[in-house]
Length: 157
Image (tube, rainbow, N blue to C red; front, top):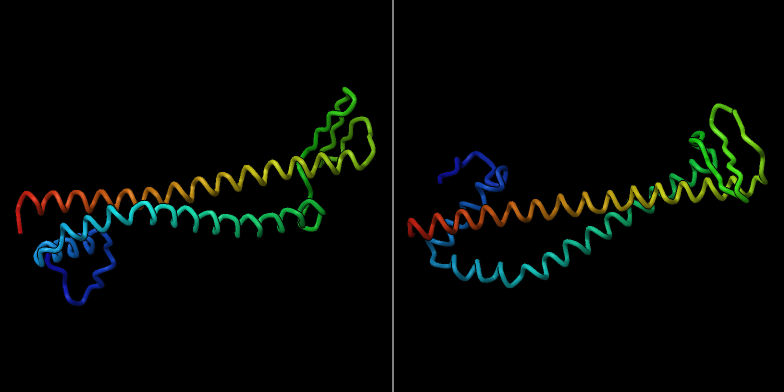
């Protein structure tokens, strides 16, 4: 595969990987490169997971700060809150319609617990989608390496 000299070879990652693998095959170094990839894979996956955890943790910290502002009423109202206490259901909504009243500390506690569960859910969703996306990209990269290596092996360089 020939790349035009005026195009960025890294613009198409898969074509760039194919060019690199073909170059390694021409130099007789493809086998060593594939062995190195296989040896480094466990550490690279571990590092990928660790950095993803750090990224999600940073975003979660920002989200917690923002949600605390929301819980304190700085950024807007809240959705309905349902509190179970002594067998009685107490509800308040943003429309101002209220059920039986309890101490305000019970309502604040319920709001914080509800908010914490929602924030935890969002953090886990962010973690799993981010990790899935990164691991999917790695798997696609390995698919390219496998397909190109198999093609090179069948054609021979």
